[in-house]
Image 1: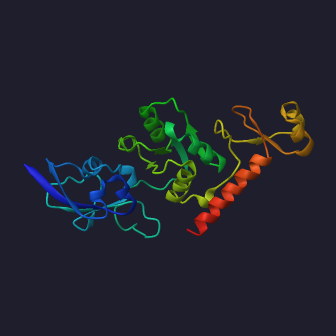
Image 2 (image 1 turned 90 degrees about the horizontal axis):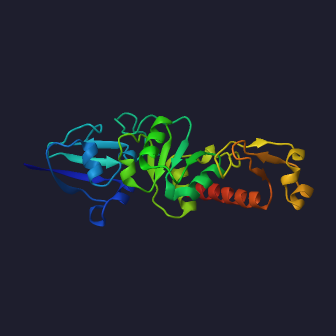
Image 3 (image 1 turned 30 degrees about the horizontal axis):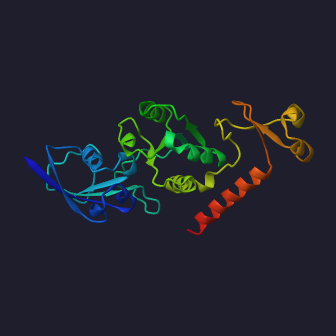
Length: 251
């Protein structure tokens, strides 16, 4: 027997829906008694994007089975409203924000490292390894692959919308409210290691002549050995970060 519910997705969850189902309540037909999680993901929305579900006006968890006739409202993460009195879908907030970054998002991984976040990235790992790593290490999985976020192992995740790396960074910082947590130039852009100060005399032979003559402050990655200093590239990156912060304040 075929059953039917009326369902509506709110705000940015509409990004995952076809145009004719956005910003409106629509009927959905199905067989059996699927969980609300399975039904939502069948419609294209990963569970990691959902923070509140109302069924006939009452909050519900992902395990609730649907029998037909229900009215379902699905909401994303709330930034401004306090919905602590109802059953939110997302797990407890993380005290430390660390990321696992999918293969197509290498530039985003570098930008996250630039502003101080632990962003694990390896373009050669499988989807299963990404899901395992994010779950075992309590990392937020960043991907453009909504099917990857539907895996039960994935607890924390976000589906990147933009293909522009700068916009991707802005998405992540806004989604997780991270602008006050920026710690620029503390991590290696190449391998994610935490940079350490190193005396100039220990790296003299590795420095360009102009850098040897004009700068005295240096940092080294203990992982890959790369040397960093506050040259032209540093100032360009700093300008970029200040612009990012200012844009957020006025948005």
